[in-house]
Image (cartoon, rainbow, N blue to C red; front, top):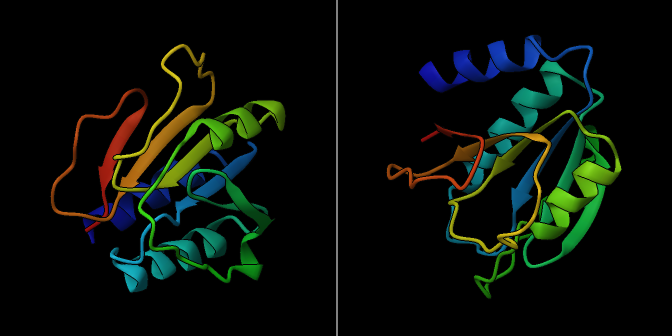
Length: 135
């Protein structure tokens, strides 16, 4: 229940801001029920959130109410395209559901406030932003 309270407070504090939720779809070895619950939870708190599904590229961008997440089995993940999209779209805050094992260009200048929602018991060091364990 702890992560829900943290996430709820973060989203409530950003009601007037542009927010996106990205889901790393590079593997189906994740806790899909948990991820679906996070997507639903965020959608109830802030219905105008854009849902970005991505692995090594962006697969889809939809309103969060139209969530139909498709997972892949290749395990390749890159955050670069999502971060560049968020910058271009002037997203204020990006929540990214991932195990943080993906790639991004090291010289990428990330200005988007980023929260890594890690659906695992192990939370690795994040390259920037803040990690939140949601397991």
